[in-house]
Image (cartoon, rainbow, N blue to C red):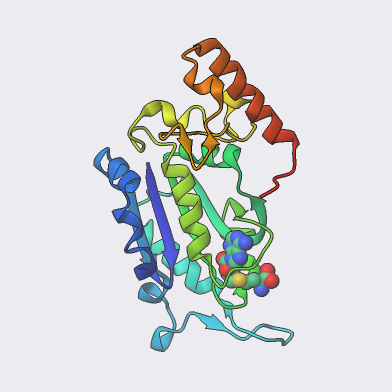
Amino acid sequence: MKIDVFTLFPEWFDWFGTQRHARNVFERGTELRFFNYRDTTPLGGGQVDDAPYGGGAGMVLRVDVVDAALRAAYEDGREPSRTILLAPSGRQLDEALATELSVEPHVALLCGRYEGVDERIRDQLVSDAVSVGPYVLSGGELAAMVVVDAVMRKLPGALGHAESAVEESFSEALGGAPEYPHYTRPASYRGWQVPEVLVSGDHARVREWRLEQSRKRATAAPER
Ligand code: SAH
């Protein structure tokens, strides 16, 4: 899979590629590339934004600047299968969308900044818009990292154990419910006991208990 991130701050991503699951998928051929709008802007002095028509606060990322960045990146004709704008008003990221993206051969993620981006970018240059939640970040960079992280976990070899990704929160294996709780040693700590069933050695009961816990979490509002 190829993932291209368009941003004004590629250095924000420096640490990102050093995580274990990122390195695992890079070793297996996944490519993560960065493109800085400022490197290809057709405007003088590295300009990328402008004041909004109609007035108002803040600056807006220009459509010609983003178009130039995309054209430069894909002048070889190898266009992405999905070109996604990060936007608070986009389709909210969930496990289903992460899975959907993980089977795309080539995804481009466009980070906005400032007050936002010229609407013609959304209308003309991208295939969809994705939000990481109903709140406003100061730029698309953290949102892009969230998307890339959620997608990369799903790629073969990302996690140490292939099974870890199968039965996870919101996965099909759990009927879309959150994952069941995990416990590890010690079995008793300050009087806090691990549920008896987990140390019973009865696999069928463990399985039943886990599915029940997962279902409970799906229906109950989180207490903490
Ligand atoms: N004025 C805009 C917010 C701009 S925030 C509004 O009110 O909707 C600047 C940039 O950060 C956006 O262009 C987008 O790329 C990114 N961004 C902010 N919050 C986001 C979110 N929840 N999901 C995805 N991207 C977000």
